[in-house]
Length: 230
Image 1 (tube, one colour):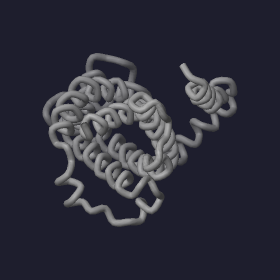
Image 2: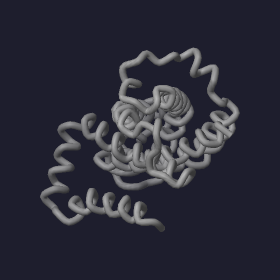
Image 3: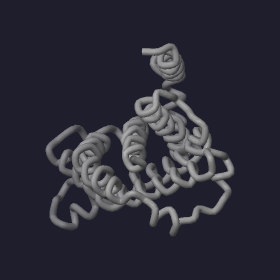
Image 4: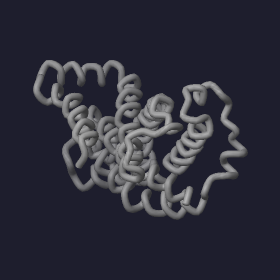
């Protein structure tokens, strides 16, 4: 482990430690979650998912940053993607139990608000299945498109205001990697189980846990991106 790794770990500890050491700060965090859920989602994903991509870059290249990588534009994009994710989580956590009950699985909506039970597990699994077979592929592809656009603009903040050449980028994507790794492997073997756990948690912790999973997503997609360039 090199000095820069120790510095990175130290920065993470300094960022997170106050929330564990101060009850007042933790209470303020929970209050902000309740009153400004989408702003908090923007911050959580902007910081944590970008950190995941930085870690992924470190694993593959030995560096936490490099010319053209674009940490700042990635953080901005992740922030807005985080708002989208939080909105979809809220939509699906309400909608899927309602649909399940219309199919005769009674009591799912109430179970999702209570303690862990077999019915709550079924509800969480159904929400995760729905999220990862409808929203996730679109989200992952859009993220890949924005990632490519940032790289094509040399990691500059100009990427945030320049139009994305959707047709050109979509046609240039490595669909062997996108399908064979990102969709076919990470969704059934990681994301469906991980998001099942997410929806078993209390609502105030779900977006934070999803953002922490975003660290893993950043690593997985960074590995996929490197594999696609080989």
